[in-house]
Length: 100
Image 1 (cartoon, rainbow, N blue to C red):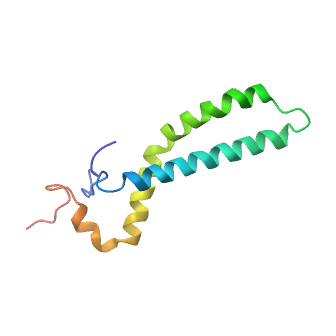
Image 2 (cartoon, helix red, strand yellow):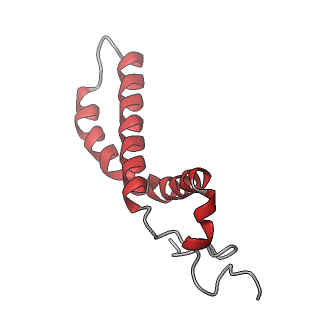
């Protein structure tokens, strides 16, 4: 991922890694929970336990890696919606600065 937005210069690396990681892990857990529930409900009398035994850990590795860029952008948007006055403080120098 880029360190800053090429259009507005908003930094994507300053003080948002903890929140983005938390959002990423919670989202990955929900993806696993929903996937397991759907598989179990649809195949209930005889669930595919071998598929679940190997697929669940694989999903828990793939989901956070796949969802991280999306969760990082969503967390930045959420952070900006809560702290709109802080936007000038998190711009990268030279990119997105208003003309003097």
